[in-house]
Amino acid sequence: MKYINDLVRFFLTFLSFPYNLKREKLSKNQELIIQRIQENLKNLIRESDDKLLTHQHFSNSVTSLIREGKLKNFLRKGFIQKMFFVHNRLFILKELNELKKNKKWFYYKKLLLEDDVGDPVRYFLYPSSSGNKINHVYHLSCLENTLNIELQKIKNIFEFGGGYGCMARIFSNINNKISYKIFDTYIVNCLQYYYLKQNGLDVGFENNKFDLINNFEKINDKVDFKNSLFIANWSLSEVPLDLRDNFVSLIGRYENIMISFQENFENINNLKYFKNLQENLKYKYNIKIILNKFYKGNILKPEKHYFLFGKKL
Image 1 (cartoon, rainbow, N blue to C red):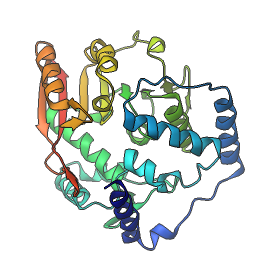
Image 2 (cartoon, one colour):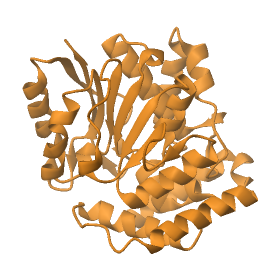
Image 3 (cartoon, rainbow, N blue to C red):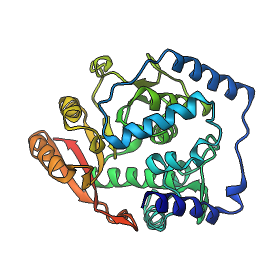
Image 4 (cartoon, rainbow, N blue to C red):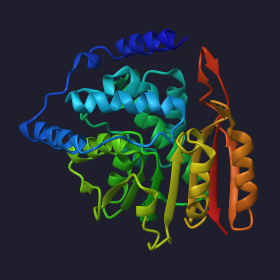
């Protein structure tokens, strides 16, 4: 089944013709950034194994990609797309149409403009963006509508599991004074560093506008939680339960919460877990779990997916 999914994903890129023929060209500065990341990896002995099996395999693949300096066109890699990047799926069109019907469409339209870093597959029905960026902006519209908040007022964000940095990139265009922290494995932090640095952002591993964190002990909770947001899109739902529990108290400090999750992951019942979280936070938050009405997994493995949105009372 894995190989069938990979094959379908590969052939779907051809729907983006002729945009799928374009390939990223690296500048000397970009090549220097890749070399810098490779040097940092030489000092990495081994990451801890506190990951579920899916992420152990993925981490090994990203490590090899960086060590071999093959970050050019990295968003065309099948294993990256499987974990981080959705492209030519029809449910994306439904999300796009919802955005177009929204009274803030002209604002969202600006956020949808895609970058060239990593050579993302352009969405075949809306080539100025990608399926992944449409998906992210749609999630943000759901956040705004459900909690009745304005994205532009958010000043401080903590993202648990930041993918390759797409959400952080979107928020850099929403508020250029944003303070943004991404917690992830060191290997994935390196990928995020590459993507965000190539897009001209102040990103690094300490005291940057976009801070990359891979150690729970280094999380600075002495921040202004007013107008803040905790994000975890298909990330908190994909780590062991003991690691999730470490973050529950941190989640409860943020003014707003946006979590996306699948009903089950490996042997964990996520719906049960997040309903328990909802129950634990109900005295501090107006908190809702909503069925994702468009995304239902893939054809070979249909599954329900959900949003958890919360706003402090």
